[in-house]
Length: 115
Image (tube, rainbow, N blue to C red):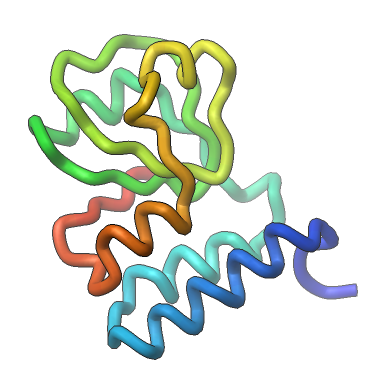
């Protein structure tokens, strides 16, 4: 079998690919491809790195897992494939799902990929 065995992951990849084609947004295609890659190739990103490369009000997508090391000094909407429990606690309502971010920014403008 090629691709992810998790049905939700596969559905998300298909939906992001469709959204990419409909809105001519290459960012969602890139995220879809990352989602179809093996799990061991997905990166873990600490909150400190997100804080370093963003400013107040940015939207970020992490094609992997967000880890809780570090602090955020400004408000950032963070979407990821997974969150550690400490990262989710520190982010609170700013931790959102990938599809929620994709619906909020269908063209992908203003969204940063951090990996």
